[in-house]
Amino acid sequence: MLEVELADRQTVQYIVRRFNLRLKHHLGQNFLIRPDVVRAIAEAAELSEGTPVMEIGPGIGTLTQALARTGAEVTAFEIDGSLERVLSHTLEPYGNVRIIYEDVLKADLPAILGDREWHAAANLPYYITTPILLHLIQSQLPISLFVFMMQKEVADRILAEPGSKAYGALTIAVQYYCTVEKVIDIPPSAFIPRPAVTSTVLKMRRRTESAVAVQDEKAFFQMVKMGFGQRRKVFSNAMKTGGIAPELGEKILAAAGIDGRRRGETFSMEEYARLADAWCALR
Ligand code: SAM
Image (cartoon, rainbow, N blue to C red; front, side):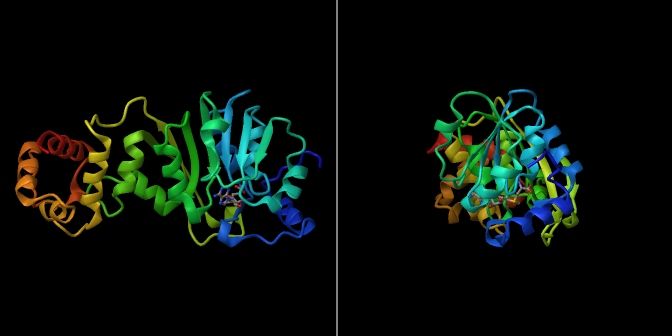
């Protein structure tokens, strides 16, 4: 296939007809049809000649093309093997693209990525956004920058401030490891087929050190889980439900200087860190 703009309504419609594709809703197959959007994602991904970049879900190659045009070395993971007959045509002009037909959650990423520093870019499949995001961010994989499109509602949760409705365990899970910035909101009209919701592209840069210093990450995330497990409960009760005896709970709160009548959803990341460190010191 000649080098045509793939992220374009007519082109995507033509490819769907030409290959007689049945788009798989259960795999989140919504393809981008706006060249400015794929370019914005590629630009946010800070790619240049030879940068190793992984993509999740190339689909028919719309975003992959924009990534490849920067000269970056693209490795894309696509779960749907039936797209191979499409991608071998649409991405034919690009010698710097390799597609691995595997579920990104099951792929042996440490072996595939090796020890070079990677960037990641994707229009994520929405049915599995959070598991993919957490899998990549919480792992020790050498990925320093993530530029991901997701449902706006999920992006809002990641960007949320303490005390807001959207603030939760996901906010802390991502912000603990990464700085986060919004790149752009995208309307449903930018895709074929149209999703039901607005989308957002976030740029997440892995921190060299976690956002807060904690003695024990496991204890920190357990505290966070207690705080958001039952949002309506005051934190002293949430700790009880989480298996911390009331006397110990009182000591932890006192040592951390936190009022147990507050709800966990009002605590900043620093306050969770103080609680976790007090717990470690007292148990
Ligand atoms: N990148 C294309 C675009 O922007 O037009 C397609 C994005 S589409 C929202 C998501 C893609 O992810 C689909 O091609 C789907 O088959 C693929 N996908 C879904 N689950 C996956 C998984 N677990 N691992 C790898 N790819 C997956």
